[in-house]
Amino acid sequence: MSASEIQLSRTIDAPASAVWAVLTDLDNAESVLSGVEKLERLDSTKYEVGTRWRETRVLFGKSSTEEMWVTEIDPEKRTVVKAASHGANYTTVFTLSPAGDSTTLTFHFSAEANDLGAFSRFMMKIFGSFALKATTKAIRRDLDDIADAAEKRAH
Image: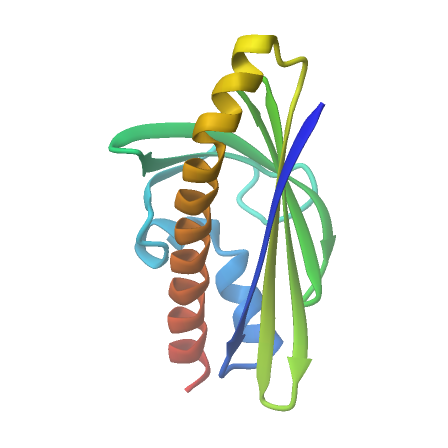
């Protein structure tokens, strides 16, 4: 097995309640997250453990749709979202850390590839750093978008 991880944080000029409200508002994700083309709920109208949705983003010039689901929630503190696609398991952990009137939002993304053959391992070595840079850029954009929406909500 092979794993890749990215962790980025952003301090947001808003209380944890405002950041949490934006982070868990799947119905408005398309208008908040500039990298999301479409979000389709697959079940519940709430944000709770087990909630599932399909999220479409443009990656490397092509639309890519992934099914995601919530696996953990600690309201206004932490949530975990998982996905599985093309032989890899993805985990995203969002952690909110209040600091006075602000909140630090940490986005920890990990990808673990299952049962890679020799050719796939070779291709991962060649293209892995490129994919990591593109994913890091997308995460930074998401953090900025969440910050903008939470700050507008708070002020």
